Length: 264
Image (tube, rainbow, N blue to C red; front, side, top):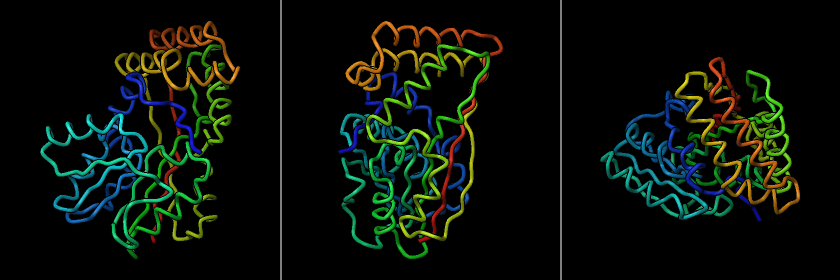
């Protein structure tokens, strides 16, 4: 059974709300056109989904998430944005869609949390029409880097990887996407990379506060304690390190992502 390392507390959703097609699915945008049907797997609060829907209208767009928790927020965003999107709870291993029924299946930051990403890719390809696309993007945590040096953030990264792997997930998924696609029998693949960068005062404040909150009030924090990997005091120190980084005038952080466009 899959365990979502982050959970859906507000510090996590604060991060997810920042995501747009432009900053999180730029590799897919040139492939989109009006009238395409899109399935967005792992849609969360729907910010990317709504952006995709605006680009493919009047195509049908469905956003799925394993949890109902963020979907009311996603529906409200779609209503405010005046785009048609359906949101539902769904299982990436058993999609409620017929074979060859959608043009694009998109999954952002999903495969890294799965115990069987290869099976998920096969299922996404199943529902994709011949000539359509499966588009996946995942971070590679080991490639995350920052300045100034911070022992606290070093501890955060090591702890995050240990918690994720305790959940049988893969935090360094970005570098593995191509191998997973090949294992799923998918060979018509274009692999790219892109990065998020947080360097301005507002970006540091936003990202640092998000992770300071996650370090003490999220499923990640609960799991770290439950698994015996960190104490509450150690999590407080990690949260303080994030706030210290956010306050640094020369603070900088980059996160690399792997991306695949898979032609079905």
